[in-house]
Figure 1: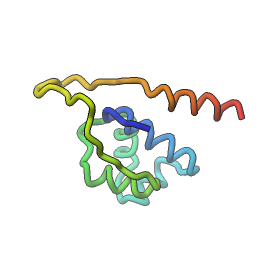
Figure 2 (figure 1 turned 120 degrees about the horizontal axis):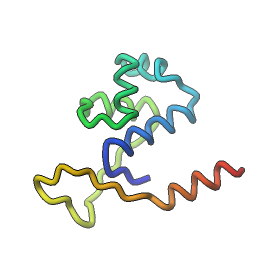
Figure 3 (figure 1 turned 90 degrees about the vertical axis):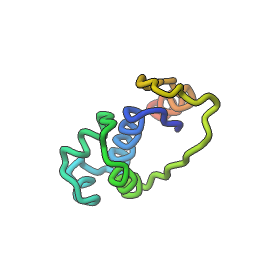
Length: 98
């Protein structure tokens, strides 16, 4: 799944946490943070410390792959671009029917 902003990253982390059967409290304990931090990240808080985000991804068994974007965002553009990942949507729809 391509992640374009903090909200999408938080949703992906939440999905993985749920797939692993972890509560927010259990994940928080694994990475040494408060449950409130997990809640904020899952909601897409863009102010989360990157080191803790990377620690959370590792605890969830997720890798971070940074690639060159086809078209970089303009400097000073504070808006977060959201582009739906149709493959991900279809994968989820197929999974819910099985």
